[in-house]
Image (cartoon, rainbow, N blue to C red; front, side, top):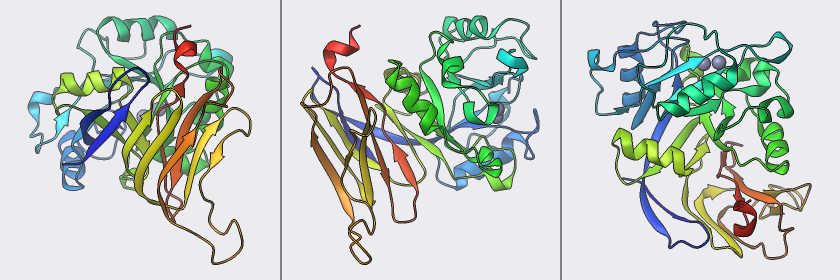
Length: 310
Ligand SMILES: [Zn+2]
Ligand SMILES: [Zn+2]
């Protein structure tokens, strides 16, 4: 079992289990190529611990399937009307049957409020693929997370949402970020996933991990330690060639860039420690690492304690 040590300011470090999750999956219940059981079989065989079937406007009756040892989190993808005639794609995780099926006739904010009311976790899915601006995303209230990467969006060159994410963080939002496959067909599988850091793999502990922001997004690299005590940021991770503490404008701190000093100078790093006491007090920072194949991983964003209380 993988574990991770997490720390946020004012709290002791906590050692938690890590569960590999794909939280955005389609099946033949909507427009996916594989049946729900086939999707469960594929993700279980690939070593995943957690799967959420999130069909467009459709619930799945999870009692009908063999879970193959995984935890299945009930979910759906909802499509309320958005600005400029674009529909939102809102991922609704850990929801109940109280969420109506079909295309919601309510506006996006009412849909998000409804997801929160049933104890669910709303996520703005693939905003770049949809064509939304960061200002449009930020107009939605009580949204805790967006997708930073989405496998099925890479075929039109819109897999990543880092620029939009940084714009929202710089404007004061605190979105955490999921990586997902948004799996519809074979080419989407096993490229982007989310690591949930929780006490156990029960649905309630995993839902608590989402709400606490105890997770990170990845395409391969794995964190084993993410600590921020209020003055220093520390991370440990599997071998990478780039580790960046990303922050406002270009105040991010680099640990290593391949060939930065010329050919043959690439170094592998497995940790970073940055004294952030001289960072602007109102900035955010987040850790982004990449391995030698260019596969990335993203921590949650952090802020200085006094700024978080605002
Ligand atoms: Zn979508
Ligand atoms: Zn989708």
